Length: 138
Image (cartoon, rainbow, N blue to C red; front, side):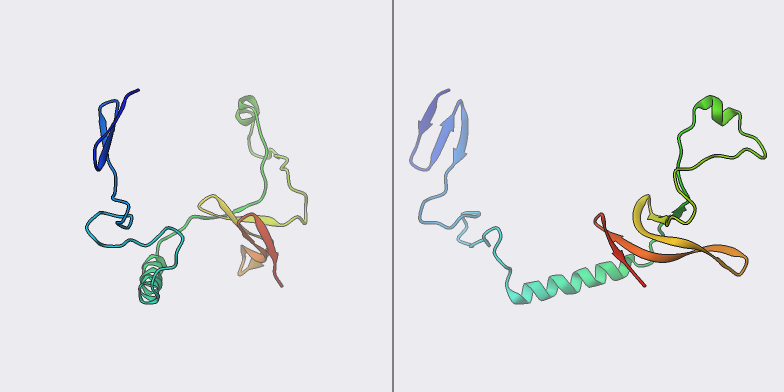
């Protein structure tokens, strides 16, 4: 590997990279200063971002999600699936009385218990799951 140096650029194996002058702030070299990584933005910009995020979230409130209540799971062989018919019973991995899982687009968001509402099944939420941690509710 060969390296050569000019007054404000360096070259390694034929690839030239410009160096910023030591007295200039990091950035585009046009005299503008750029915010350092990890530092807080100015208060006015922070307020604008918060307002834009709120409006963005508001715009997404009517996006439909597929919500599923999972009763349980099991693994069957192809032969077992082909043998299923009316009256077949499939044993699941969940015990009676265990909370059922509520999934939004396939992601676990809550657990609850089965209730009957107007001749339909429903789910009473007993705990909310956030980032893999449960929050029991009343």
